[in-house]
Length: 154
Length: 382
Image (cartoon, rainbow over all chains, first blue to last red; front, side, top):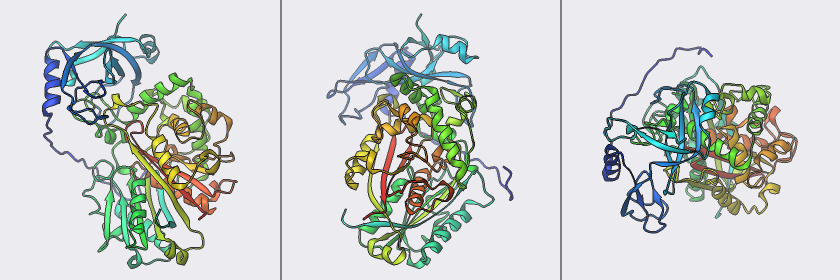
């Protein structure tokens, strides 16, 4: 619909400098060495990944850091094939909610390692419940994209 | 509750687009509700507004921009960001404090001007983990939808039926943005932009300026012969980390239980005559049926199949067309309250349901896959 009166196109661009804090820093230091760390709640004994300073459910400090498996099972997934302003990843891509083996919560990342151009082809490669494993970048910066994606384990 | 609070009048301006700017629309909707109630600006005791600065507004800060447009000039006023039904309960609390006999509650959102909802909701995530991998409300919903279908054997067709029903209902709602006579196939073939969701199963981005005047029992008796009573309220917020949450056993049950307890409802499926709920993604209406106690766990698909929630059914849900038809992101919860008010009063025009509505349920949701839920119960009876 066209407006009867004029509009102005404007953007808000604001610079922030946001602290990783001790926990995210240590978590992503692990990525540089191809390791995924979780923290264990001393009260409910859940292993939480990404690592946190405290258990959101029990509200107590998590003290133990544990290296978790880089393999897991796919809980749910999507096939993103549209664009919106500011989207960080070039479509099409597959997103995955993954339960890493031995952990008690879901971990979000991308699923890849196969052709992504066609949904029907993707559906042959991606099924809920399937096993996946992390594929690392050769050059790692200490951020979430040091894992390129999780690939299906044949 | 210590006392009783009534909604005396409502007004709304909404749809896909408009020629007016935000400031003027806030003024117009406020002027309309005061005129209907026969109340001057000086008689309004306090003001609670619901709006968003940067993400869904583009002009900051807080209520500074539109303060006088909602008659908050020189008054005690505050602004709620996030779920707009919170603004309703804050307004109720101001009256229950005994210091005010009227409160204006306004929800302001001009979707036509805003970035895509996905751009805005992407900012809900942290910059370390969620934003770089493209998390937003639609992505979150797509994970939830696949889980829901696979866990309970809900079909894509059953999910699409929600959009068929609501967009059809919206044909009778002059305030709706998206409306039409669609088949299940139309909905499923509307563009598979984020499988398993399709375009018409995702709410649009709409206008929604809504205003309501609340009054104490004593004041309401002077202002209207048809007060709509605030009967109960509950809200609940799930934890931030998406992977920690049980996406199929969320917080709506908890929010609803609190609202039912406050309203004295023991058999909500029978006691509630009509529901206006927030379903930014079609399948969520089915999930929310279950969480609200309208049917058993995993039976949301059967309930839509049965026709019970159609406008002519036993328990009409979203006769306005719901959020799929009009989605002012910030004010969508309050807009549900406006629609419920009109149905209770019998003033919903062509979209008025056939049955008598004494008690209505209103629901709002914000955040990833229903992280935040609020439920209010409104009714005509004391």
